Length: 375
Image 1 (cartoon, rainbow, N blue to C red):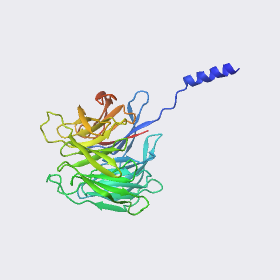
Image 2: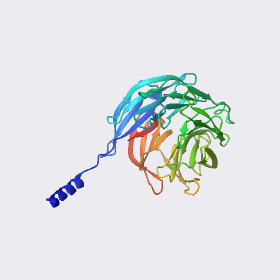
Image 3: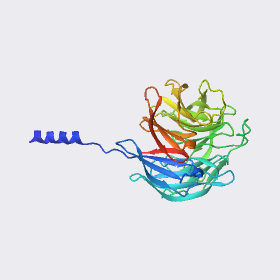
Image 4: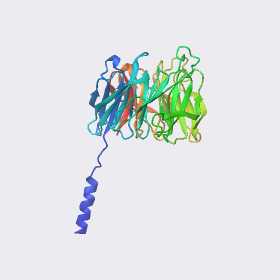
């Protein structure tokens, strides 16, 4: 009897397939070109294709999104013009159905909010306001909604490129791996501002760090910022000059290691529009998108020894204006959002070489500008 029972158990184990996690792609857009708002897609585990599950209308220009750490809520900026006060929206996300439900909206984030993030405890939401040159802090309520702004920090200064750097332009708000510091690249001042974060200071959770900022190349235009998975290195896109800056990070301080161009060797132009930056999950490669004349993803190898970069290749994004992109959590795919060709193009990533190959699959969405992955 024991032998029969054991054989039956082994048979059941052999035929049992573990439940596959549902995977969703959430897309922020610019609505001025025909988009309806925020789009949600589910990835079919059998075919790998994406099918739509929801569209959230009623929000103007949801140009950047962030997810709460538990993936139950989505927060979006609503990016208005230069003289209009920006807004932030909160949504509940159904991780089974792939649908969004509006919770609330808060105005007064600051003009031109272009980036948004949350702390690890989802106690506060932070917006980076491009036109206002400021950071705004909003408390998160018990239902996941947003309270009225409680803190706003205005940057000061300018840069040498008169057409782009007459005043501060905050471009992103990014937490350190331990969640204790917020790093804020400012395109207008050529600085990454650094703030200590303490949630116990409920009305003023941010204050300047002991190292209040780190300067970058004059005229570079700091934009997006990302940490290496090991937490010891960080990387910054310089939008105006098309370069990437590499830093070491220890004891709450950044130290510049290197500034390296992301342009092809034969490129002689100056219209870079460099935009987004991500490290592969294995920490071996760095990817940076450029718009302007190039419309490419620059691919860098990361030194295991010291975190510095070597440029090893470029991948055309097969579209125009790759403002944003993401790497799937398993590192297998890179999805590039081409704002001006209304496509998200899917590439296969070679884990050994870091290079990209088009899969032939793409999604058609009006003006996609922010991609977020949910499992």
